[in-house]
Structures are given as structure tokens and as C-alpha cells.
Image (cartoon, rainbow, N blue to C red; front, side):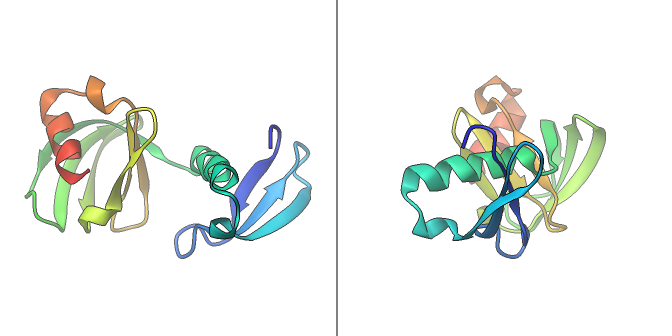
Length: 131
């Protein structure tokens, strides 16, 4: 899968189905009907590449949260500046390999957390509470 680029046709409603694999010239190579029908290793590799290729804000710091109960409004700093998000449920935050996390807010926007252990104490506490 070295130079292949995966694209999900329905990333928000059904991100694990109907994945198009493109070559380096962005020509379609094949379509994967369902990632769950692949071997775990191949499914994981494609999922990691999908996450890399989707638009995501990088979450740097959490300033405050309205509550530890969901839905909760978070005031955050991202790689694109100050922002706020609403975490709709605990399932909207999941752990990623290599000390990371992925958050999907109530609008469907994704926030990537890299290096949970390197975040400030409050931010780390909030992330670890949900994962």
C-alpha cells in the first residue's frame, strides 16, 4: 500500500465502507466495500492512512470544559488558533496509537491530539478522563 491514497466516499456517515484506493497519479485502483472484511493488519493500515488524509485540526491545548458530562463545550487552542467545540458523547473521543487521540465534535469536525503525555496537566487530565 506504499504509494496508495485511500479516500472514504462517506467519511462522516460510514467511514469504514466504500473506500477508494488511488495511485500516486490519483487514478482509482480499486474500491474496498468494507474495511471490516479485510485482514486486521490491512484494515488498520488503511484506517491510519485515511486518518492522515482527512482534514483535521491539531488540538494543542484545552483551556476549559463546561462539564465532564457530555455534551460538553470545550474552549481549545488548535494549530489554526483559538476555537471551541462541543463533545457530544464519550464515544466521540478515541485513543490512537503512538500516544494520540481523535476527537469528533458535534459538527463532524475532527481534532487530532498528538502526544497526550506531552500536553499540559489540565489538557492531559481531560483527554485521559474520556479515554
